Amino acid sequence: MKDLPILHDERTVALENASYRLGYMVLSYGLLFIVAFRAFFYDESNWDLMALVILTGLATTAYQGFHQILSKRWVYLFVITAVIAAVVAIGITVLRK
Image 1 (cartoon, one colour):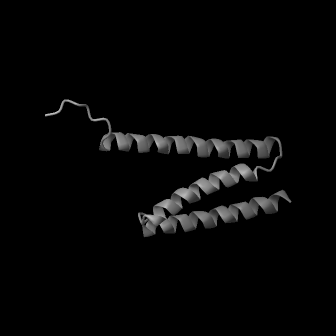
Image 2 (image 1 turned 135 degrees about the horizontal axis):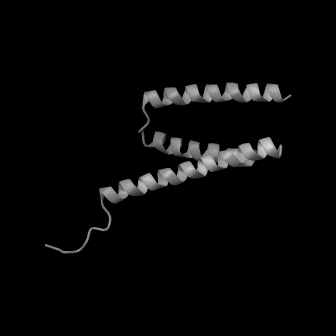
């Protein structure tokens, strides 16, 4: 038998994926916090940062959809969430004017 250590197995892949998920969450929520902070305290438009958050979410969703791992339940929740977000965005726009 070989006495070489295993450098890359299923456990390391799972831990790498978990760390990428954590990093993505920190980055996404950090950008959302910066967008909200600048909007409320400096009255700045931050569509470039918001577009970055939205595009990263769409990229991961498109990748998963391309590889056919999305369930019908996930698609249903995505549509409901998008509709609620659109209604809230319209409501905020109307209230600010």
